[in-house]
Amino acid sequence: VLDSRLPRLAAGLLVGSALGAAGAALQSVSRNMLASPDTLAVNAGAYLAVVAVAAFGITLPALPAGGTAFLGGLLAAGVVLGLSRAGAGPIRLVLAGSALTLALSGLSGMLLLLRSQQTTGLFAWGNGSLAQIGMQSIDRLAPVALVAFAGLMLMGRRLDILALGDDGAAVVGVSPRLTRSVVVVLAVLLAAVAVTVAGPIGFVGLCAPAVVRLLGTWVPVLVRHHAFIPASALAGVLVVLGADVLLRAVFGAQAGAEVPTGIVTTCFGALVLVFLAYRSRDLGTDGGSTAFARMRSHRAFVVTLVVTVVGLLGAVVAATLLGDATLLLGDVVNWLAGRSGQFTTYVLDTRVPRVAAALLAGAA
Image (tube, rainbow, N blue to C red; front, side, top):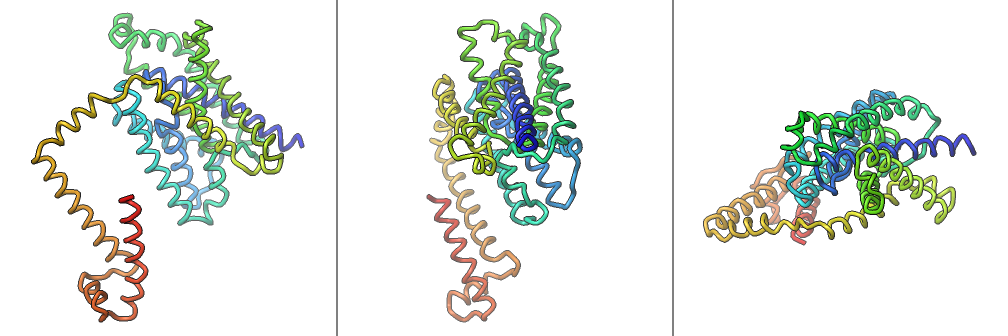
């Protein structure tokens, strides 16, 4: 019993603290309560990197796998922050992060399907599972997480100063760009450790700092980053272990071990995300008004309509003609007239319903 429970407990401690601290750091540098390893696509990028390596039959030890996850997460975070223009508001950040997360998750799913033999076992891990075989991964990655956490603690005073504004930070000799870069790298490193150990456990990095910020109303010391970061790490541990205990209490020990913990944390995190979005004052009214004002232009509307129609026709033609067997438009004409050969008929009989279903699903 201890051989199965202790590694799971250790994984919960490591993953929860890493994601909680990473979420607190990302929210501080972006000045955005909706920033987290999930909304910045860090988890999705790290997961895709690990899956891509495994899909080509490469088995990596814990540290190289963590390095691969770190590179994938760092690249994804950079793209999201660039698209959302850090500090521009929570709505833009969530939209950019959600879009990239969907794209990266789609690529990961495609690799899992196309390389099912090479990626055996990664599907459950991809939903966030604390199940461990021994303590090897935890022993190797825990020191990395401790170093990254210590780095964030050393940056605590700089983060306090940065919270006053970029101009105020520059006056006292703190470089906003350097501070943000270092903190983002450390936060992504923590998230990569968590993903390597347990997969992408959802929304822990969002929930834990949010809970601590609410407590900060009654405990003012939690506003300072020397207390905010470790408190968020502790809250992350409580969220992860609480979800694991809840899973086993409701569904039993066997089902609790088989069902990924990330499913419970994702459900809880979704509620927190809705709550935070509801409280947010940034409703994006200015951006929406500008967008609608531009669309009032008749010329812009015509150009948009033409581009959309051409793109749709091109996608339909490509989906119908391209594949394992490449066809011509004449083959489609003959098929419609009932004069096509047996092979062409078989190909189009399978492709056309698929394309029609895709069109209807997209329109819906």
